[in-house]
Length: 123
Image (cartoon, rainbow, N blue to C red; front, side, top):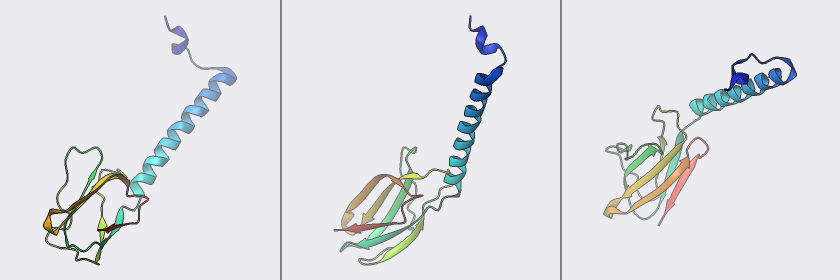
């Protein structure tokens, strides 16, 4: 039925398909390598009037939040912290959540942490 797909590619058209396929694969591999090597450190600046009690970052393929990155640390009003968002998955897109004293939450979805160097949170 589809015999032309089973025959070897010959001639100019076959070489063109091979070159295009190789270029697409090389591009995909290069993009993957860039994502793997990308810096996922983000400086979080707390310009609100509340103390940040917790900070979460989960890659967008997760269905729930990962553990609190700050642990026992807090970020006072006017303070900042440098956080390594890298979870070892190779992802660049993350959902970010900051939790402040009094239960105030600030969430930012689908953030490219490989390109984002800082995030400032205001009241």
